[in-house]
Image (cartoon, rainbow, N blue to C red; front, side):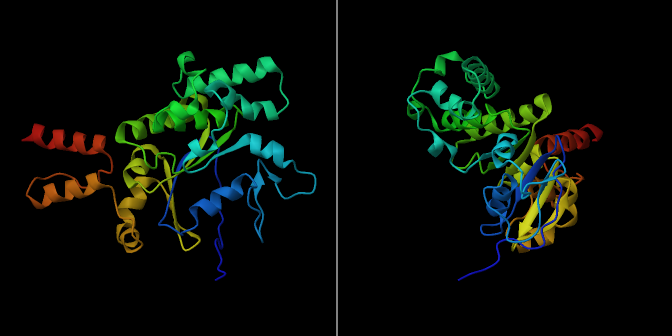
Length: 267
């Protein structure tokens, strides 16, 4: 039953990027991201963080995991404290910080995900699915990571909850400069939020580029491995087949809206 999970993977994650990591089930996405903070150790090859080999003899994995925050799929399963504030304090407390610094970090992290003081003393288990996700993400943010890696953080959420989480990730990237690596099955989410797209297939990086370029130039290959293009792209193609002279390269709703407005203004 043994098989290689990752092979010949070579890539660089640059500061401030928002990367969408996609691939069908079993393609190696989750395995790959668990190497980024040393949770899994590669059987061959090397991983460098800011130029340092994380497998080096004197390298501190504790320090690495403070810089590279990993949010697992269904992160609410990681919640366990009696109230929201205590739960978010758990990570920085393990960094041996002062009580004042721990509380400052917890408050900043909760504010970053849109949770005000009214939530502090509430049990995390009384919250909605989307609120639990935000608390779990805040717990990682309180560690002040430079890189935030999330494995399907919107899985199982309703559209409103999914939109809230993704918008907050966008703001963390744009306003705080946190590097985001987002694992997702949603081509729409990757098209809308990611600036760079990595496609995994059979343990390898199949494509690496801007979402527009990947969706435009590699559509048939994506469909062959069960991914395809965003739904809005298909809508634009249907409009073109119906005789409406729209350009079909739109991959987001905003792009499609602008193109439709352009066409009808010309008419």
